[in-house]
Image 1 (cartoon, rainbow, N blue to C red):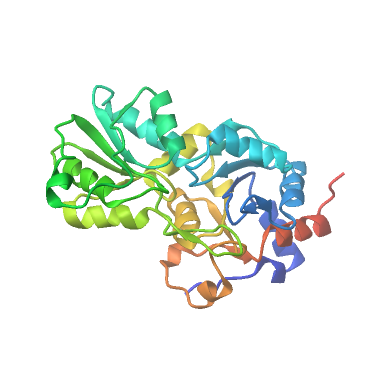
Image 2 (tube, rainbow, N blue to C red):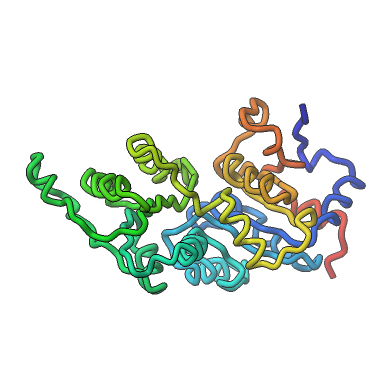
Length: 308
């Protein structure tokens, strides 16, 4: 069994060899770069210094609540200078998958954010209108929301106004043959800062899985769809020289393992030292190293490398 090692406790030679072992860095955002949009201590300098070493920096996040252009702007405004082409979210992978299905002649039913709906419409997809946030109680009224719309896919995304009738309509559509079942993110919890994480739509998707016997197709990390999209979009030629940095074992470390990337776990977000000491995940998810935050990596870079 592999024992996880803190990069700060490695020898100078090991630290230098490690940093020299990758050319591209894929960074998760929430819990790694920032918490509730407040940059993690040392993260700005770390990303800047990685660039000075010639590393290519990109961002891979499961955030569907902001336009990708907005995420890039928020990063740039906080001195992580980037552009939308270097940011991948489940929005891009979802559109790519829907395009593969060739269902623009059908409607999409989505339980999700305003931003995700806007993204779908901008890509040319027709959406089923949302039912009311609140409905009159009673079975007869519930059944009045049944319809015969030609639905090609049901998408479960993050929805602040999630309710019973929305999931009931999803159930009706998914029980029809040839309706694709799409889930944008697989994270159970989303790190947001000191008030603790918030729960994601993972549980809604898996409730529908139980009652429909349909397996949702994941678009975000660590899905095959996301892995393939990233490799193609970022033109990654050598996965072994690509480092994936994340705070989630189940999402980020799994993503790295599936893609064949090197992996670095940070403890500034959803994972803790207890998760390392009491490892409950597949062995292949174990990263080469872990650190408390990007500040640790930045200190190592400053100590051992010339940045002029």
